Length: 529
Image (cartoon, rainbow, N blue to C red; front, side):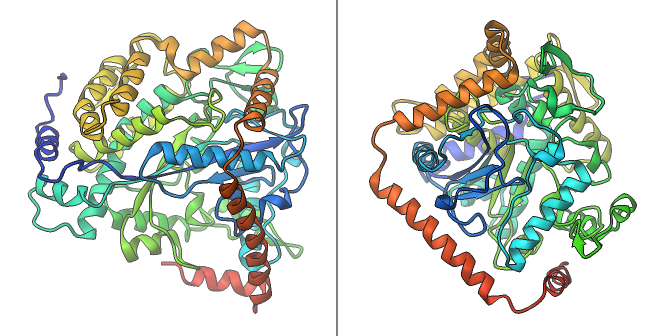
């Protein structure tokens, strides 16, 4: 199977699943998506308008909020057992949003539209409440620390949890007699470590940001080449969003978070949010009565840590993410390395989601030793290389400190997933997971089929700039949603009701505040640890 031998433990665990008395042991895992998109004007510049009131309160709406910028909409689905249900909901949500955008469009790619410097990127507002002000000050701090331009990048996050019936069978495969929450958290951390080892494959298969608008790097040093006036690119890039230009930003080089256990993860993250950083101290926290950041620590809050995957648990009011994890263990994982798919109106498709679901199973079933410092350096380098030049002929990655051919390693991972996809397809004559796997395998045999290669080929064939091409795609997507079949009236009413109720919830939160913002922050951070 490989020059490093067969993973016998993986094969034994997979066989346990195949032979389990419980049928459909991998089926029915819960799936949710968060899709980000910039609101832009008809000419493709960043919208300076407030978040449309008809879409509800960004502080409290369950389905429609904003990320960094007031112009960066985030659409959030509930968790569904079936991918098609999730995508139907996401499609309906897009239809609702587009009916309240007027002339504006949702930008169709991860890398942003034409920008005119940091001042052209409005920070998101969340109202007058203390929690709303905290969210806004946090974003102001991100702007001071990393620049607002980087925060204008959009992505797709995929949230996933394995079905309850899976865990007892996995415990049996590990020869464990209990199936406690500690065991579940331990196995999720095994998944997180293996995603660090193999997640470069996601960048190769689904990266869709090989080019960008030159305004994104205006005034900053870079090594990008010019494709056409106003368009810069890397000829073999898969995801500039996940490269050193984007979220793999050098600014967090001092942040080292272990995935070797829940305890180590919480320890390292807690240290990062409580350790002062000299550079951030120079920015100042409250200057002339105005907050520039929440604090001057390495991370203002835990969510500032940029990671391609996160362990998650739904938090209680006022609870820190690490406190939630310590309270109840890992509930689900959040895959954060997905570019917006410019070829799909909702930014993602069923094949991608099904593949990642199967990939999650691969990562949890394979052996997953603790990651030492030297291995982590290699893993970071693999991700950076694939993001910046993943389609380069003959590209090699580091595996156990030895160089191995990307294509060979990728095919080996695909081969390991066949049995997993058969389990996920059990009882379905259409074999949707097997079909998704075959589509990804084809991309390894023919690099021209990857989204990044297709996107560059389209740019070169059309002669358009990045901004012109994306604006055209954005218009097509808008027309698709506005011309689509009559929307689900019941769901549209539900979205409208949620929007109206969210405004009422925000007002109630604002009325209930009884302390100053300074006191609120002091109380919030006193609860840390």
